[in-house]
Length: 139
Image 1 (cartoon, one colour):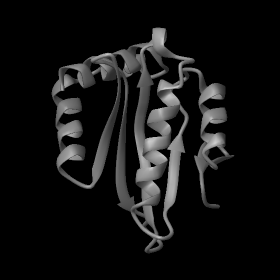
Image 2: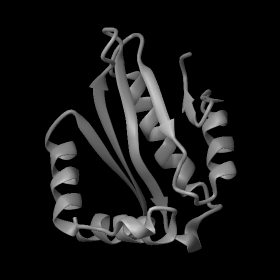
Image 3: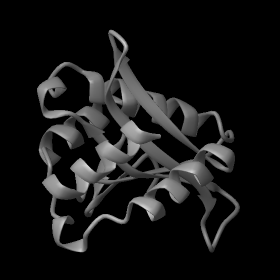
Image 4: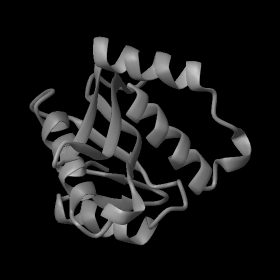
């Protein structure tokens, strides 16, 4: 949990959300609820060190019975970007999402302001396409 919180704080500080602030207790509660409930937190580890993480949720659309998966964020420490650490996290998310139901709405919001075009390109390798400001496998 300490490393997840450190990465979450770094993500907020580096991206466009820096003026929002970072409330550690709120982030901890969210991570714990994902781990204990209908979500997941993935980490990428190299030689015993966590180099990246991704928090993901599971819900439903308000208008259909198709499960909806989404990310809260993906973060890789700058020195590990370009090593496919982030791609491994994204792939784990997409595989997890696809395992939720025969048809699932996989959503990604690429909104942090950190390497957005690279992130979009990596998700494209996993079969997702940009639709407006979001990425999805449906629609």
